[in-house]
Length: 230
Image (cartoon, rainbow, N blue to C red; front, side, top):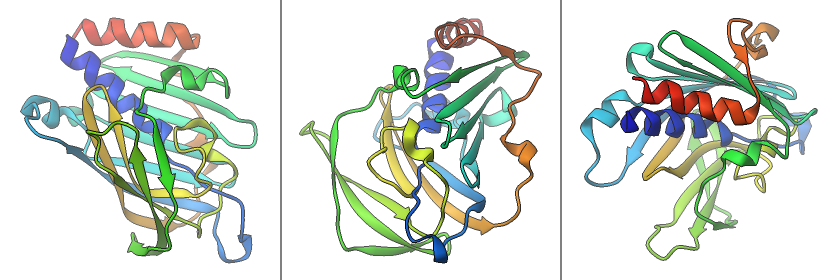
């Protein structure tokens, strides 16, 4: 029970990470899809937990709208997030087995879920090629001494309005192509493996009517109840 609860919340927090900006618009594109590989970092990892974690995440963007999707192995746990950077509104969905719930959050409510070590972002002049695009590299220095620094890689080529408003990297005004995230004792690394500029249907950014709408507080309680019942 505890294992599935931990799994559910770990996957859920991945939604709070992808971001972008609005400068240099002439040479940038605002519609497409990114596929991220997900890696679990650390020693003495639980093999069963690793086998249940999603290995990839799909991220879609179109102007001020974004959508991200993750599913555990066997589609036992599925998450979706739909954000509007212009309105600063995000809807989260969770499906565990046959139970489906969703909730909407504004800029104040979304940080109710934030649980991450404090850090400082060091800007650098380093560049990297990732997922077929030229990207900038910054360094994350954590306040905790036992936390190793990590690379934060982002692209200035993609233009989406304000989607970084809802995550812990909201000081970075660009799409993240690689980042690390600590949550519930696990460190996750997401790295973009592909970036494709393409037309995306508006329906991709719409939450499903099959999910029962609950308050943010009820949403967290539902996650606990569903996970503990497995």
